[in-house]
Image (cartoon, rainbow, N blue to C red; front, side, top):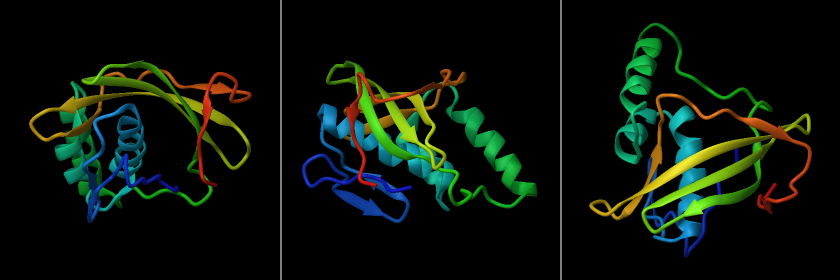
Length: 154
């Protein structure tokens, strides 16, 4: 999956699997959501991404379950062709502290799926954090990008 970068929105720093230093703006929140949301499920150092770049009441549960899974199984890896590419987005709400976005991914078969993502600004770190809720918001499919900003490079 291709992930976006921008000289103004970020990430300004990429160290291994961590992409950080996103702009404190709506665009920075969008780019952070795309970067972190793509990295934490599939990168080799996923644990570091989750520990340093996420928050939420589901964070510890995710860490515990993933560690237990990987103790007895191969690491999770994406299957070629099964990951969607970013196709669009819309902001549900935005304040300087919290951004709620709907992000649309287009899959190889043409299906488009919408995921709701919440980002929170961390004043201490000066960066956006990705929410890991205990209950994942339901995803939906859409037929077109009406109402969304078209966004994607592929």
